[in-house]
Image (cartoon, rainbow, N blue to C red; front, side, top):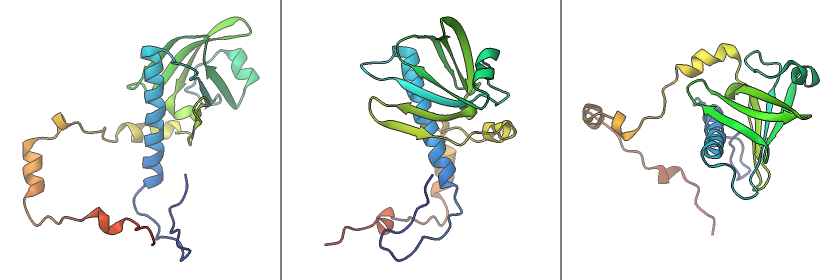
Length: 179
């Protein structure tokens, strides 16, 4: 991830106390998951195809021993013409897919946290990720999920509107084009 800084040459912005880098990476992972879910439901349209890089030395990765021996640290798979049984499991936070290696059918099961890269070269999309260590899995699972409108109660809306709330206009923080 990149640091945010002024483009006016007057120095860097203060260090953020908010985890923007993590939020951005989580958002990029969500893009990858949605693309994989689309492919699971509809197949890959047109010239779309995916390169998925992942850490083979992650104990949660389930691949044939011969592949692990051949790729002891990292491996990249291609989902294009010949793959089957693609399954994206949000609850288990992993994808499984069938691929053929040297004419041998293999099933791979890869946790999202072991994925280090996702690319769709047909449209120039390339996303890189920091691996999520097994110790961080529980902390990640404890994070709240995205709230849907049904999750927001009238009581919460009322509580939020009571008291001395302040409205902050984001326009004040946007950069204006120079004339």
